[in-house]
Image (cartoon, rainbow, N blue to C red; front, top):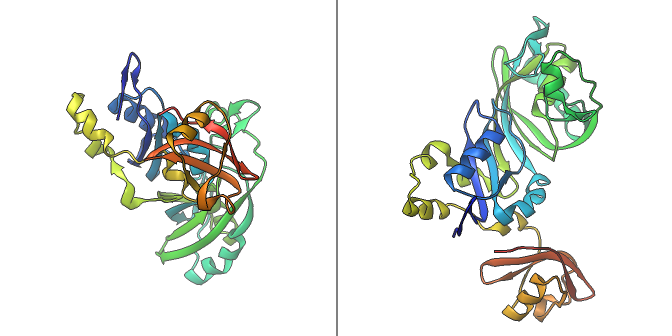
Length: 306
C-alpha cells in the first residue's frame, strides 16, 4: 500500500517491467515512478535502449535489496548479424570492419567453449563503464576513443538456437557485468567474419522470469485516480522477492521492534542451530531487517521501514 506525501507516496516492492524497444532504463524508471506516484525507485541492472525484456524496478525500501538482484544470474536471448562489426557493437553504430565470411553452425559451436566460464572481455566503448570519472558512451559520443580494460565475467552456458544465412540466435546465462554486445563482437572476431548484436532480449533476472513481466502499455492504461493507484500497487512483488536464496527468520512483534532499533536478537526455535551468515527477519508478510547470524544471534545490518 502507499502513503501519500508531498513528494509522492511511500511505495515499497518490486515491479518486473517488460522494457520496450528504444527506451533507456533510466527513462523507464522515471515513467514507473510517475505512474506509481512513488517517492523513490531504481532498477536492478541497466538494459540498453535497443534491448527489450526484464527490467526489475525497486520502489522505496526495495531499493535496499537491489544489489541482490544485480548480483544474481541473468539470461538473454540474442541474435548476432555476421559480416560487420560496428562502433557500438549493435546495429545503430557505423560499420568499422567487414567480411564476406559467414560461419556455419559447426563453426559457431566450435568457438562457443571460448566464451563459457570465466571470460575476459573488453566492454563496448558505448557503455556505462566509467573512464576517469566519465561514462564511456559520453566520451565516445564526443569523439574521444575511451580505453577500456578487460574485465573477467562469468558465463554459465551459451547455446546456439538457430543459424540463418548471415545471422545466428543464442541463449545465454551469465553473471553480473556481462556485455552481450562484447560477446557477439568477440565471436565475430574469433571466426574472422565480424558481427554485432541485431536483437537482444533479457529473459530472466534471478528468480524473475518473463512470466512475471508487465508491459508498459498495460500499466499506462491506468489513470492517476486513487482507485487506479491502489490497483497498480497490487502488481508489486514483496521487497523480499529477491532474497529467495537467503534464510528467512520469523520474528514476533517484540523482536521486530528490537531489530528496527538496531538491536540484535536471539535466533529462536528450530532454525537456531542451522542458520549462519546472511539472513532476513520477517513478521507476517513484512520484512523487518537483513543481517548476519553469528553464534545464534541475528545482528541487523539493514533495517526496513515499512
